[in-house]
Amino acid sequence: MKKLSKGIWCCFAWLCTAVTLAEPSPTAQLLLDIQQLSSEQMQGRETGTAGAAKARTYLKERFRQLELTPWQGSYQSHFVYYKGRRQQSGINLIGWLPGCDEASGSIVITAHYDHLGMRGNRVYYGANDNASGVAVLLAIAGKLQLQAKPCLSHHYFFVATDAEENGLHGSRAFVENPPVPLEQMLLNINLDMLARAEPQQQLFITGARRYPELRRHLQQQPGELRLTFLTHRGPQRRGSLLQEFDWPNSSDHAHFHRAGIPYLFFGGMPFADYHTAQDHWQSIKPEMLEQVFTVIWQTILWVEASSALQLRPTD
Image (tube, rainbow, N blue to C red; front, top):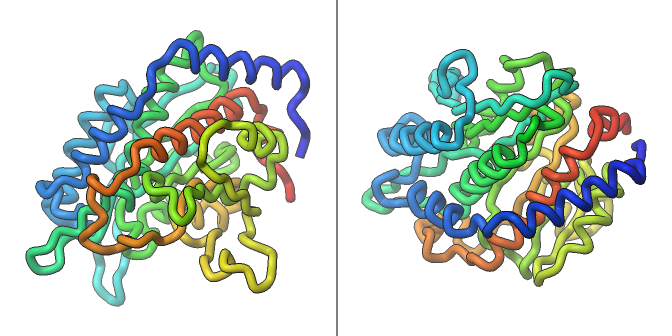
């Protein structure tokens, strides 16, 4: 990859300082969004259910509050997929934040809002998986709106995907019917399970080894959060515990990867309450969530300071 020039990197460092001094922590809103999306009223947000519809109502209102532009007049993007021989339907939510007129491409930020729904009378709340990722997506949109003066370096699509738990169907539908040509998508940033940092206060960033300047900068962030950087092809070390987890195909970034679009996946490994009814908002770790958000926001600032050529490595 082509390294950031000294001038660009100095500008990036100044941006980081300015934002840190001027803006309060978004943790309170992050926690509120997680609590709302994983409430009992949302009924676990299973695709095709009333709970998922309630989650969309909440998210569409948040998109409006954040002044994201509906794509082609509507936030909702319907799609169909097959579960066995049965046709199913899902609904992605897409908000757009335009960049400068001369912006050369788009950044697609994804987080799935669906979860497992109910099993009998038990609600599978899905606070970490993945109300946390959606909350971070919303927080990024809010901070980028403040940053968009006079305008942003890139266009941004914010995509809350549906039917991820069923087989990554929402992201597949987005990639197969993209709002802009795929060659104009510079990078996918996918967010999944961000509020627990388990095991051992770890955040995994798959795809980051393509970007050595970003990696060096993130390693300098203060706090107890441990960052583990993986290649876009997944762990290379034989016998590693990490090899048991299929990182390139583990979440919605998989379809972008298969389409040749670079990605950064911020996420955690399966945690103690993974896919159980105990994944509720009370188990969220606010101090870890704040540190995770800081790392992701620093990444967004790096993206804003980077050219299309720097974001689309050829390896």
